[in-house]
Length: 162
Image 1 (cartoon, rainbow, N blue to C red):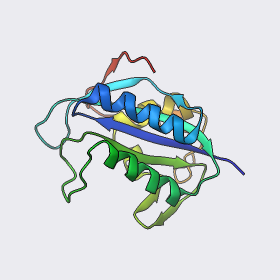
Image 2: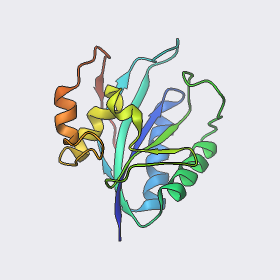
Image 3: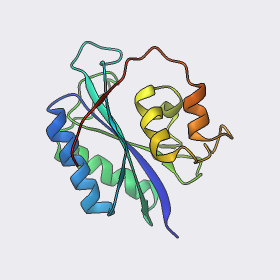
Image 4: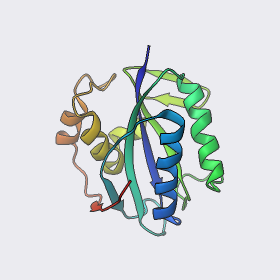
């Protein structure tokens, strides 16, 4: 049975190159992708260049743990270093946001990703692709969550060709 999965992508170092490359790598690995708009947001929690963020969706028969390992490998291929600090510049950040309606916390994988409810740069592009999807814990749709979300985080749509 194929699961519908959504991945958040972010970068603020060589962002155009790393975003385009990560989308191509994800497409090669998982097949056809649904791709949201790309949004530019200021660095959050530290001084740094603006981030570009988007969400991609696809169907897969891989487990959440297998997907997590693949995402870490792709990050490493893009020179991502995993340190203890959360708020730092990144060549590439790949986060598994939703895996069907699964609620899971195991081996460093938390589903649904808790930051989906916190940050515009995850929720808005996710709502574009998965607006009709029920959040497994909130018991409302992603579109309803976005509609009710109040934040003063700046966001600006950026044009990309994939």
